[in-house]
Amino acid sequence: MQIQLKKYTLSLKHTFSISRESHDFQDSLVTCLSLNGETGFGEATANPYYKITVESMMQEIKKIEKEIISFNFTTPELFYQFLVDKGLTNFAICALDLAAHDLYGKLQGKTLYSLWNTNIEKYPTTNYTIGIASIDEMVAKMKEKPWPIYKIKLGTDKDVAIVKELRKHTNAIFRIDANCAWSPEETIHNAPILKDLGVEFLEQPLKADNWEGMEKVMHHSILPIIADESCIVESDVEKCGLHFSGINIKLTKCGGLTPALRMIKKGKELGLKVMVGCMTESSVGISAIAQLLPQLDYVDMDGAMLLKEDIAQGVQITDNGSVVFSNLNGSGITLL
Image (tube, rainbow, N blue to C red; front, side, top):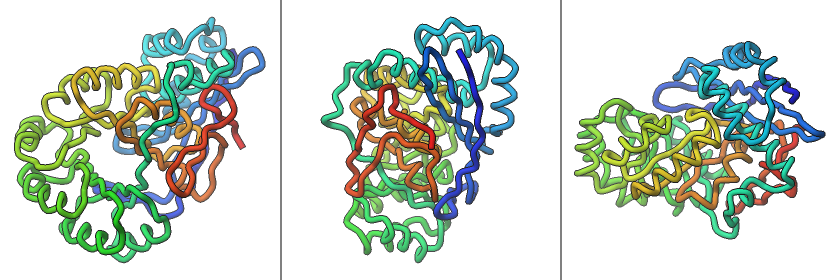
């Protein structure tokens, strides 16, 4: 098996701000795995919160490059276990696991969603994210991109006022993501006000390790609470079942499609709503997420829509939110 690593710096259409950081660019690692005339593509983006850079991922992968080249590739699951045994971070594993799944589908001559026996006739609509900015800027972003569902990033001293103002300009569903910025009391207080403003759910309002606070919120919030920073890997799902209404799985954080499929299954067994989110990936990562759509209740796969210029072709999202799947197999990806 041949391997190639490519670093990209993705330019964003707008400065993207959440409660703890802002950026205009997103560094991304794209991996290419080739076998028998087919090439699979995977992606993982850098993230300062988790202290992951493209360079650190590349260093990890290059240390075992010879072993990857000589690996007898048969299934993505066996390749994933090999990577776990080598001690790679989940971010680096994700980049390789996505490429392995794309490659496997291409070798099998099937899309991933068909290999998983799922039907793409019905699937959730992605939200479109509005990052923290001045109210005028946030309104302008909504007007620039009319959309049926917006994820609103909050974590300021005027969060409710922001939502009230945004509501004047659209009838779209709102989802609120405070990225760990609220207290339990603030969350419980805000929930009924936000529900009246057309908010569907709250995503990760409290710090990731505030389990006592999240249990309190779970029992007193009028809105559903979705875990994000509290649900990183497979072992987190069961704990989240006691503290949240649902989970938001990030492929980059959990280690790719292989663990994500197991997390989806476990979440459903626990009666949780299941969402998959993105981390400002290009169409490489977004097309992998799209293969999971029939299995999801909610999805946040707007990463490529936030970019000035994409680096790949794959799944396309139309102006009304519907998804056009690639006619290629695997995740349906080609690099531009």
